[in-house]
Length: 307
Image (cartoon, rainbow, N blue to C red; front, side, top):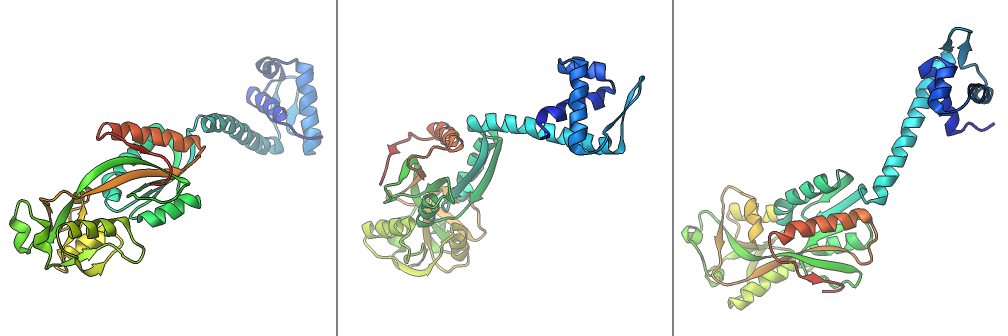
């Protein structure tokens, strides 16, 4: 005979009531039917689980152990039902999110708050300081569900939604002559060595810095290339050069480095990215949560497909 979930329920009721009559009433079945089901269970187990007398019902040593396991089985079955319902509503699952540069220090705390409020039962994986190419690869191969990156993204299977546009600012060693200025012109940094973003993988911020300097009339003299914003700021603080970073990088305070606004207008775009045709309800609920947050900051411009 196969032991079924109902046998666990019947046994637990008898064990907890210590009385077949009360257990039968609790289960809404007849006492003879309940007794028959318990005998079937004992036959399947191959051991007596209950000691019956005319006055009471007691658990055998085997019954005590079986009761613990039976209660765990019933609790797991109940959890499975609850979790399945949550999954059907997109309230449970896994969410892997990538962040580029300054978004790691600026947007990440707000994103975590959204997940904890809207998706409290979702397992969260956060990957900070990822350049756009690495995030696109992660999205396409499934390691990432959502990315906060800097366009352009030339991949037909990725959807983008602009989160914000922010100006570039100069970051200087505090000993730099222009560190005392309220604002500076980018052309004033033409003779300075730059700490910049990697050129070999053509990072978006590398191209943005190059373009900003080109419009200012010079090509930056790159002394060092780094992948992480925090490393860039540390090298600038050490006096190894100057740099350009998105405004949101100012949230990261490094002793020895100062931020100064530029007189010229140069901006960096931050976008949210996900796989086209994504059907995960967890991802869908998360996207809507972020859209609600960013709608309070700046207008959202939707871009579908390749940018």
